[in-house]
Amino acid sequence: MVTVNRNYLKLPGSYLFSTIAKKVKAYKEANPQAKVISLGIGDVTQPLVPAVIEALHKAVEEMGHAETFHGYAPDLGYEFLRTAIAKNDYQHRGCHIEADEIFVSDGAKSDSGNIQEIFGLDNKVAVCDPVYPVYVDTNVMAGRTGDYSQERGNFDGVIYMPCKEENGFVPELPKEVPDLIYLCFPNNPTGGAITKDQLQEWVDYANKNGSVIIYDAAYEAYITQDNVPHSIYECEGARTCAIELRSFSKNAGFTGVRLGFTVVPKELVRDNVSLHSLWARRHGTKFNGAPYIVQRAGEAVYSDEGKAQLKEQVGYYQRNAKAILDGLSQAGFTVSGGVNAPYIWLKTPDKMASWDFFDYLLEKANVVGTPGSGFGAHGEGFFRLTAFGTYENTLEAIERIKNL
Ligand SMILES: *Cc1c(COP(=O)(O)O)cnc(C)c1O
Image (cartoon, rainbow, N blue to C red):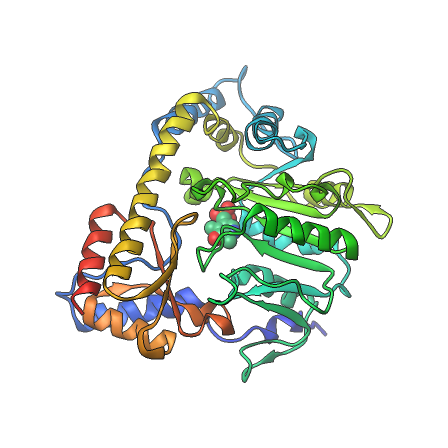
């Protein structure tokens, strides 16, 4: 008899963004004249920059000629891209990372979900609360957690590290020592950042206790403050305790193109086994490489033109973030984030529940955001707005919220 992976059945109800989509659809059907603005989902709106488009065209053309055609890409990524990444993202920032420690993939969502596979099922996992749901759900699917508690709004057997107003949305070192620690900074959903000194404490803690930090740096391009690290490898000792995940989605608009990478330093050893070799094995067995065309587009992100054009594009979203942050604080809201990240974390007025505020904003201002409670129990009473809209829509949405 066929049995299924019953761990999947532990996952509670519908996915956050499908619930939002259903509510918005119902509202639009009932109010066809309403001009609804979405500052909800974390997807970009600006087109790919010219340097990237040019690289794509060129690579497409190459694929049409026998002499320049490319079949399967190397499992771990083309040398030209891994070298560009190691040089630009790491060596130029003073981080010791080599090209052969970079594993090119189709994005950070897959990597953040897949990385848990190289660890035993008895590892204890710690996540921030609120959290990017992928880290938790993939560990649930693997059977690394207990059941979901409806009452608490989270899973048994997971260490949740509250990120609250009082700690500046940076968690405290957990008392119960975890094996795997997921950190994402600058953070989705809170938009909060961690300073280099604070991150150094986590690196020291992980090295002392033998934990591994899985560091999601998908939003590093949005950092504006000097004391905020772009990579965990800026911290001393990170090569022996940290894996870093990166994406081309938020810095270069590749959400629909798909490209990312994971860094696993060769010194990272646990249980007498090199994690670099385990991830290489996993990647080589289950992944047949990111497309040649897309890796050439990724390479263009590091060209002089690409860098200049993307600085401008990220600046466009940063200007939105600042407009939301300034506008809403002038309107009397308590807001945070938005300085080193494209997310603004808004405290709901009068302790309104996150979903109630969602309905209120949709009905009264025709603005869509994301209820904080959808990201975890400690997100209750908060609301996420993204800076990924157009500038015009962003200003219009702020005006409407101000006039509530
Ligand atoms: C958007 C995002 C990513 C990037 O995902 P891709 O699969 O590369 O598009 C990774 N981590 C977090 C926290 C994100 O918000």
